[in-house]
Length: 114
Image (tube, rainbow, N blue to C red; front, side, top):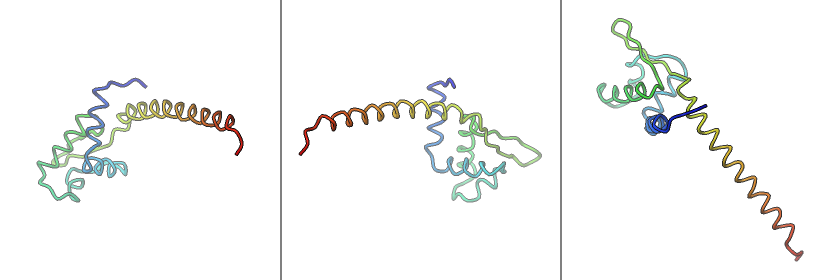
C-alpha cells in the first residue's frame, strides 16, 4: 500500500491525542452521535468539535447530519496507510533482529569452551 508522508504525519498527529483515540475506540463499536461521543469528556462542545474536525480532516472518521443530529462513523480504509507503514517497519526490524540473532549465534559458536 502506497502512502504519503504528509498523510501519515496527519494521522499520527491525530492518534497522538488520548481524546481522539478514545473517540476512535468508541466508534470501533459502531456509529455514534457527537453528543454521545462528547458525553464522557469534561470539555465544552466547541473544544470537543476540534477533535472531531481533526479526525474528519485526516479521513479517520466521516460525519453525516440527519436533522439536528450529526453522526460519526469510523473510516477503516484510512487506517490502511498506517497499517502499510507499520508492516514495512515490522519487516525492516524483523530482518535486522534476524541478522543480529545469526551474528550472535556465529560468535557463540566461535567462543572457546570454558
